[in-house]
Amino acid sequence: FKDQLLFVKELVPGLKKVAILYNPGEDNSRAAVAELKNIMAELDLVLIDIAVSKSTDIPQGVMKATQEAGAIFIANDNLVASSFESLVRIANAKKIPVFASDIMLVKRGALGMRGIDYHQTGQQAGMQVCQILKGVDIKDIPVSHPTDLKLYLNRKAAKVVGISFPEDMLKSADKVFPIKPAQEKESSAS
Image (cartoon, rainbow, N blue to C red; front, top):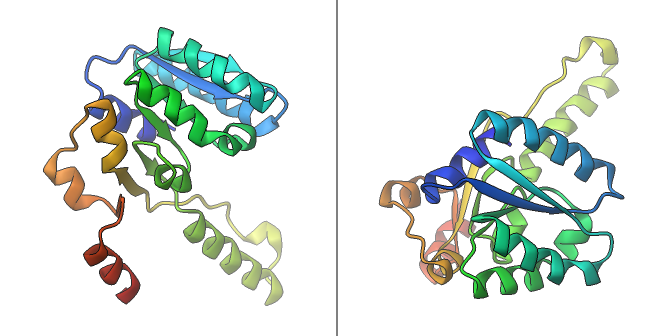
């Protein structure tokens, strides 16, 4: 999360408060909030955590977030992801940028993310499974974490909330949405 939050701070200068909507019924979401509190304190940010237990809670949660924070960050939360477009619509109307830790949410309207690529993580896990199938004892396979962070940006989302990506950031991005026809040809060729 630290790299993701540094990315958010880079794009929203002077940011003091970041809201997160999360489902307290998801263990992964509760764990993310706990970790984010520590990281945000280290980065001199205040976390506004907003619990939503059902999709009908999300619009009210987003309204609260837009009143109290300068940006919204969405960790990997299934409930929030299922209503993501409505979240983005409300945040965009209030000119509050939405950032996500999931690549697919950038395509669906988040301004951007710097983080792991699930495809790459799956390949990494597959390599470990291959080692196990070849007879390597699990205790002899070191725990590994993704090392190659990806940068995904959404120009349309940035324009809506009045943020401009620096040119060097656009050039270094792994993917920029919406994809233009020329980019799509390059993407399919690689």
